[in-house]
Image (tube, rainbow, N blue to C red; front, side, top):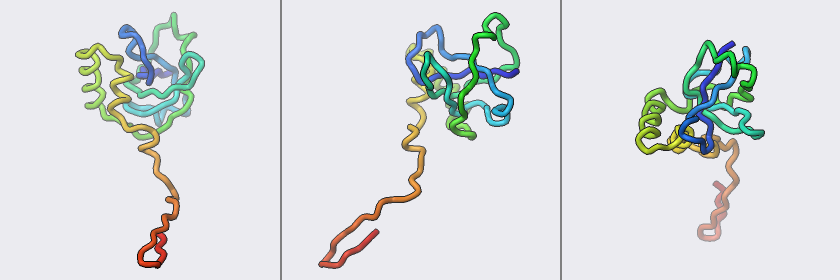
Length: 131
């Protein structure tokens, strides 16, 4: 079984910068550093960014670990250099790394592309133009 350390998009105490989740076998090819995922967090689904992958976890807590719910993007939305920068910013400003990372990334709405744009009508000298 493999595990991912994930920075969740939520306010956390500075003692808990990331959380460990199990990776389902069918997710393994797609989970890599910088990938955006959905994870269970206090009864809700929250976005998170994969920081690192691990082969082993603490046996005592392994039974309590939950699985990643969904992989939102199969390609990393943030580079390893941006993750390292976020860690330094987090340490310097005493801010949770999840907050720092999500400030550095574009929002979901900005990354989604619209398939159809609504028609825009313009009037110019009594002629109608539809763009």
